Image (cartoon, rainbow, N blue to C red; front, side):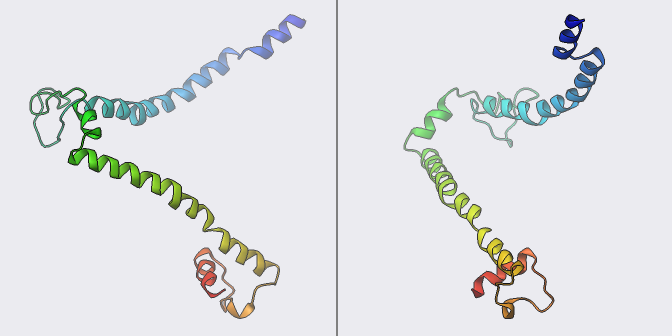
Length: 147
């Protein structure tokens, strides 16, 4: 009896495995179609001098007017070319956004939240409250300028 209980607790029953497979299959197909395949396509296309306006040789549009260039696109990123300068500017802008804008956006809601807390505790100057008592997010953000 102990072996039957131990065997049942560690394994899923057949109906549970079938249910899990039927539930996960559509999700996995969706992830493959809309996440994995575009990522693979993006990596493949970096090895070609690709432009959607040029006619390719096969059904994917690669080859022909979109020639294979190998690692030349990657070498252009680090050379002193217009493409390289644009790449370095994009990397710089990404770091500025990540280090300045995102933290500021995370801190911005703190002020309206404190205003709502004060209003709830009746410690807020009531002459600044709207006449209808509406403390929606947009109204509260506007009230922050008056403090």
